[in-house]
Image 1 (spheres, helix red, strand yellow):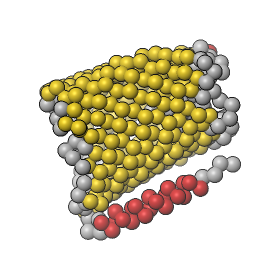
Image 2 (tube, one colour; image 1 turned 45 degrees about the horizontal axis):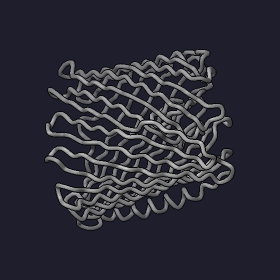
Image 3 (cartoon, one colour; image 1 turned 120 degrees about the vertical axis):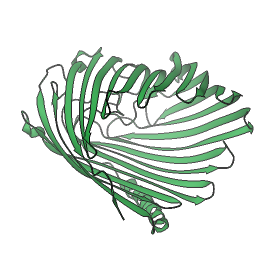
Image 4 (cartoon, rainbow, N blue to C red; image 1 turned 90 degrees about the horizontal axis):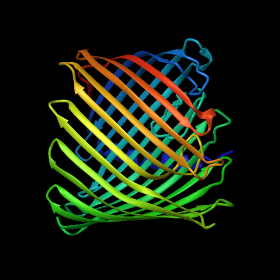
Length: 423
């Protein structure tokens, strides 16, 4: 049985931190915002398998948001329970929980502390942070706790210390529980202000599993920046990382150089890109390499209209996911368009494609995930919002038992007071 005693240590630190914040906001402004959402979702593949079963899910979500702000501190709390009632398969009906806490305090003129905790209990297999496959409607819990301190000692100079703890707990015995600890530090320092700058990062991740082999991953990154204009930076970067398994796993090292630029001359348009390569060498002499890089374009026009295009290539570790598949090389591209269709009506379209190659899995896995969808948001009254969303997902894998397609449509009605309750 896993020892979760570190939870209590983190929560104790968080509580002490919050007491310090609450002491600083004893005379703060307090705003309470209750909200209620009711809706229905249809999916033609509730288990995300090749054998489709459809269902209608009725949902009701009462919730409350609380914010407290003072001169040097702020605190926000949000809790939303959701009762999900399945019509065809009532055994899947459950009570979901989502809670978020964020706190910030300025302990000196240039130093601030931050604490956050994000909790989720749900049976919905789709997760924005999990790129591996989860099937079925067994409930699971994720929780991320973060502590951080940032000190600014110049116009663009800063040092940030951070620590993150994450755990995944599953009711499905076939899905492995896991957790990780991740301390790190990022230093930004401009050697010659507005001309030459540096960005340095050190990060350490210790990952533990119930059954699989535990490992640690250490990495260092250094970026040299040359500013060519008020809105144009170019840079060269190098990343070095190494993985150390606790027992018989094959340790490896990663070397990754790249070059890139950031350009934001106009207030409504920005463009960033980087291009490089990674080299992975294992203790057994195996070698693997591939491209790394990113291109991101953001454009906005008219009030409320925007276009975002992002493409990425690189490597990753399946940390904190439903499947422990180890190292993977990936390529992905996504596009999001938002546009106001009327005074109180907004629409959006999105499309995304991701290709993952898991060479450490046994057997090797190769999968592509395509997502596309659209949404409408209509506000007939200041305190009422109607949302309609549609999404299509298709997973193609060399393991044919993993393949699936899903069509998902949802309509919700949200009631929120026009003004929060103030104290």
